[in-house]
Length: 89
Image 1 (spheres, rainbow, N blue to C red):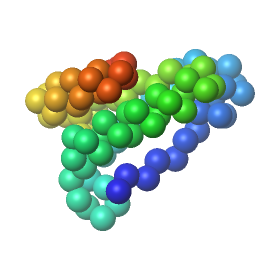
Image 2: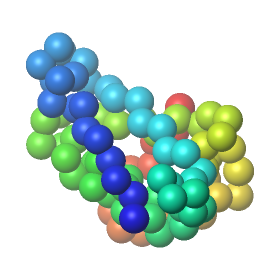
Image 3: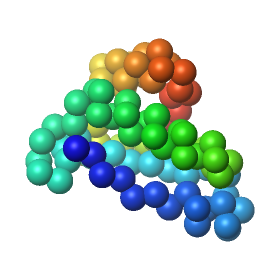
Image 4: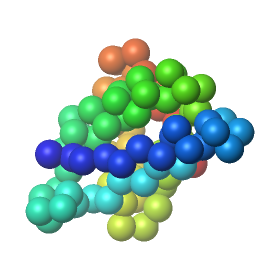
């Protein structure tokens, strides 16, 4: 299970319109996140962000799920299939 902490409400209060999001490869129990778990986080984050007008950008970074280009493409396809907008910085 992936647990997120959301700071978007603070960003909106400060006038920011973009929020950088990082997901590690492993969850808190050291289990590798599945593509579907990552897609679920994307979709929940976008849903929340729409409510407060803060656009999330998921970061491509070392020790993160996104350092594997093949996974990024698969996750992007799944996000788009569910009506989301895949954004990676």
